[in-house]
Image 1: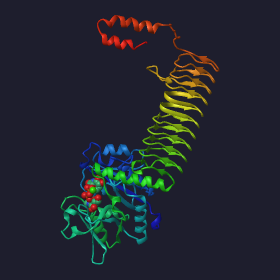
Image 2 (image 1 turned 180 degrees about the vertical axis):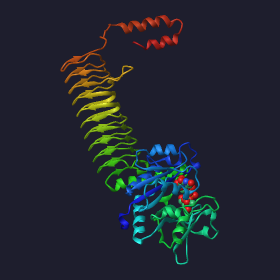
Image 3 (image 1 turned 60 degrees about the vertical axis):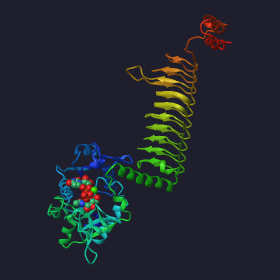
Image 4 (image 1 turned 90 degrees about the vertical axis):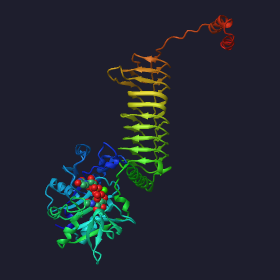
Length: 483
Ligand code: UD1
Ligand code: CA
């Protein structure tokens, strides 16, 4: 078997507690840019083409395992946190047949590590015929990290932990990232790790010296940007990591032809797809399985989740879309809310303060102001007047309403579901529509207007006479009412 077609198994260490988060949520489940930290590690491992991914869990194990259920990983429970060396062995035990595989170790709390960096590490490891390669970085002050100790010839000799390091060793700037790539002897050699050190823990770092003692090729691969292995240990670290991921994503979209105004205010998850000449105004948030086709414009402070916008669609400021499909050239907002199951055909106009849910609006439908359209199908070119409500809920069940094409729904009408309104029907403003309206008909369902001549003048003058004696100021005010 050649080096390049050896399978790769990945062990992700994620059993530690992370007390600095001050949280009831396990550290590795804290989200960064829409995904728990440990899920970033899983995604990276899978993109790398891992055969098996084992996640070592301990603190909050049940929660971590539940969060990753369905992602195709294996779990190894580390009952007691006896150190990284012990955690690694727990992970290997859970992997099935690792005798011929390369093994990569990652942490569950370093979401910034890029798959490209790991590919470079893998290439370097295989090109050199290395048995063990440690990913290292260099910092002016590497306090806290394990340090890389090299021999006189510059070869990597061992890793010394901060606690165990001599004053001279503590001046070393090259630090251990905690990422290692090794051959299939890892399991055998890791069993030789002891806990005879300042912490009384089984250090995985000892594996490097164990490989070297066997006379095997041991190397270090230097990171260009040490920030990639920055672990998020507290809430500030989470925010910092999120900021870096956010910038990577907005940068990638801008390079691909998306205009982003004030990109430092725009948040796009890495599950989002954007076409060419998409324009995003400040404060836009795009989440989940969202796709924006070419030339879509999203106005300031709009939040779009799990939605598809076809070419040229425009979402104006402060709109909220969730699970919606918006057709070509439609415009939505400002201040519109499209809820799950909303499907807008092409050229639909949704104006301010319009809410839709489970609503299919055919091409050319217009709902310009203040409406609730729930559980409804509306035909082409129908005009939905301001204040229209589809009363879809009777207090127990939801009912569906169908409105035909070319219908005119007058302002402030209520369609009491389930209702059917035929094509080209006309509903008079202010109607409470409780019967179906056939095609071409007009429905008016409201109290008939009475007009009583002179009533207002008589009303106000009568009141004025009653109070003038007692409350002159009120009489003065009433004198201005009704002429
Ligand atoms: C470790 C390295 C250190 C390196 C640093 C990089 C060792 C002994 N030291 O130190 O050289 O510079 O990472 O960040 O490995 N974990 C378990 N089970 C355990 C202990 C740890 O799963 O029993 C997991 C943690 O959840 C974490 C990772 O292993 O994801 C690293 O553990 P941590 O305690 O942060 O190691 P460091 O002391 O930082
Ligand atoms: Ca750490």
